[in-house]
Image 1 (cartoon, one colour):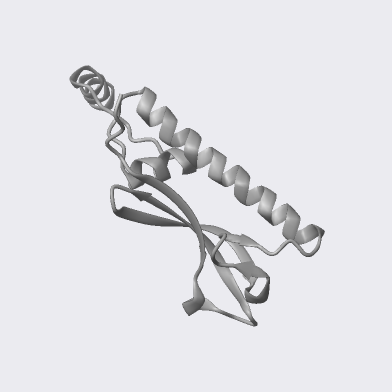
Image 2 (cartoon, rainbow, N blue to C red):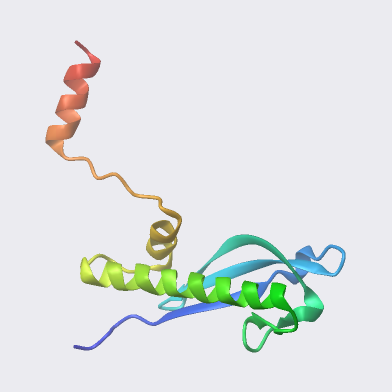
Length: 122
C-alpha cells in the first residue's frame, strides 16, 4: 500500500517573541507541504535549545523532562495521524491538530436537525 501523504513533526522556537532570553515553543505539523503550528505554552531558554535536533540540550533534570515531554507530544501526534488513516478520513494538518487538541467537528444528519427543530419549537 502506497502512502500518498507526507507527514512531519518539528519543534521550533518563535524567535520573534523572545523575552528575557526565552522563547515560546511551538510544534509544527506538516502534511503535504501545508503546515500549521500549535503553541505548547512552554518558554525555553534560547541557549538550551538545539535547533537541528528540535530538542533541548540535556544538561539538567529540567531539560531532560522537557525532552521527554516533547517525545510524548511527537508520539501523540503520530497516533492522531495513524488514527485518521485507519478511519480513512481526509488527512491534513488541520485535522491532525484538531484531533490532538480534542476538537471534534460535529456532523449533523437530516434526522438530528429535524429533532433539534421539533424540540426547539414545541
